[in-house]
Amino acid sequence: MTECRNWMYVVPHTNQRGFSTDKEYFFNHEDFKMFRTPDEVGIAVKNDKGTFEHFSYTEFLSFFVRT
Image (cartoon, rainbow, N blue to C red; front, side, top):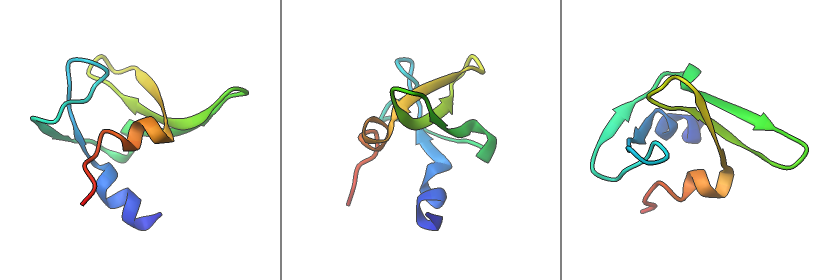
């Protein structure tokens, strides 16, 4: 989990759903929350409006290019 935390602080930014590949923004630890509902488990990321958007783990990881 430590390695995950290192890259979670740099997230591509977007006008749509908060993600894009052309820019990177730095987020504080408080900008990420893990959540669990009766229907899903995932990561919530604070958007530009200050509200949290929920993403499944698979969806969240798909925003990053793996090398």
